[in-house]
Length: 212
Image (tube, rainbow, N blue to C red; front, side, top):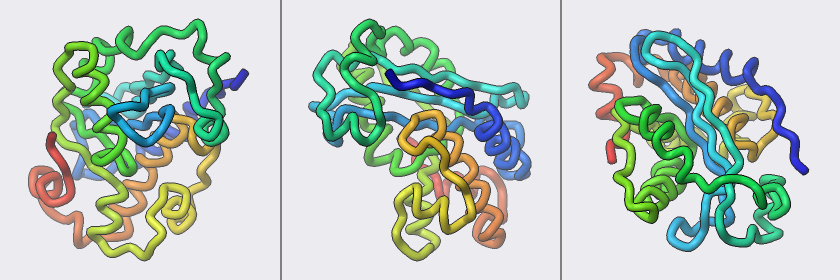
């Protein structure tokens, strides 16, 4: 049975640094990460989700849970994230958390790695599958797309970029740890490319953000 440690120290430092930038001051900023049964959002399901960061007033936000996907978890997926069928047998499905997820994501700046093509598609399809309308973030900042836009040398996997920017990625492929690491990665990128991130929040979100 996988044990989930308290990752408050890592993600709290991350979000404080991100919010320390005038660019995102006064906004709800949340890192989002999912672990899933596979790569296809139409046939695969979420097994763990995490939203970590801070509200517009600076108060901490932490919502994480392992959930029952309603399907078998392939062994190759379990080897990546460490979540097995026995871990989810008595867990609720993700629908139980929809109200909380909606409340957190609506009007927030959501930060993720490969989130536009992966995590966000899972979120949209899961909400649709339950007959619910998907959340409406203010903007999504995808650190993979930002790295490509800034022509940061490959590889652009989360672990590789964390290594490049001196970030220790502990408990990789744990949703809360990856979400916190992505917040820190965004701050490192912003700090390393000050000219590219100069300007108003609206301008930067238009340049680097995605709005579904």
